[in-house]
Image 1 (cartoon, rainbow, N blue to C red):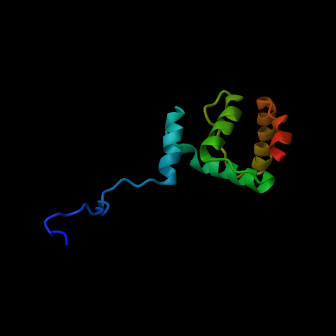
Image 2 (image 1 turned 30 degrees about the vertical axis):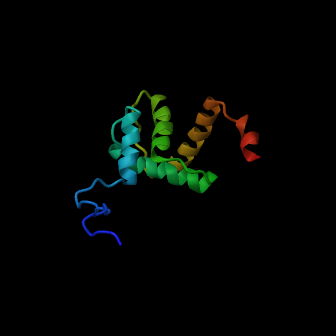
Image 3 (image 1 turned 90 degrees about the vertical axis):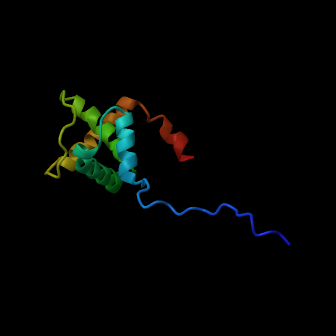
Length: 116
C-alpha cells in the first residue's frame, strides 16, 4: 500500500477573470494584423456583404475577407471604406463589383481545378 503523504496535482478550475476567445476578438485581431484597426466601424457593412454573397453564390467570406474586398471597391473612389447600406441597388452593386474583383484577381482558371 502507498502512503498518504504524497499529493498529485489536480486540475485547477479556470479563474473567473480568464480571457475569453470569441469570434469578435479573432476578427478584430486579424483586422489589426492586416493594419486596418478593429472591424467595429465596418461591421454591419461586412455582414451585409456576407449575406449577399452567401444568398446569391452560396459562398462564405469571413468579415475580414469582406473588408478586403470592399476596400478594393472603395479604392476605386479614393476612399478608405465606402459605406455599405441596405438600399435599392446595393445588392446589385456588391455582386457586380465582386465579379469585377475576381476578374482583376484573374482566378477563373482555378475554377476547374477546384471543382474536382
